[in-house]
Length: 298
Image (tube, rainbow, N blue to C red; front, side, top):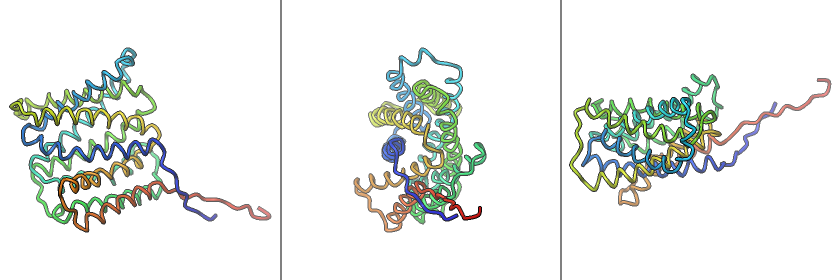
């Protein structure tokens, strides 16, 4: 029963995920600037309520058919978005971007195992290889400094943020073919925004002094978040959580490229890491096809 490896061409859904991953990677710089003028939970609330308002304008007609299933699924995904983005934003107040990228990258190898646990479907062997290559690449991109940290508040918050990120990817795939795309996008974005604002009293955070930095960043990232979540909801109807995660692993590669344009120099190890991430994406797109040959007398 010989085997051969077959290349699977990228579908429109996968190309869309690659595009929004580039958008996603570009947001780190804006968040970094915004955190110098705003608290994390206010900014998360502003960002996702702006995204929710944009999505309401886009899907206002379909909202008339809102069901409890839409509300439940959207709220669950929104809670994961709130936890993932909120804790990551909180962590960026006290840790540098390379350490944050390394810690956040831990969700990459977690998703195939989460898919196996919750969906009872073992991902293809090459999907695990792709996840491993991508994660190794992310370690190189983060650099050796990311491996020598102490677990302070920022590191702990970022580590915990990987769990809701995994949850978001799994839930989107779980509900993608069961509910209305527009309605669930609206609910999840509004939920994330409201939870962000609701967290402020419990953390002692107040509304920041007016600054065009957090206003422009909040509105810009709100529009980007609407685009990102809408694309994820649509594409993951047919893209598995494991393969989607491999594509999302390209986020720090795009972030590094934008940093390069801004004047940052990438070390050789980071360039090698970017190549490994690309190899991880390629590996996830391969399939081992087994063909049985009929034998005489069988």
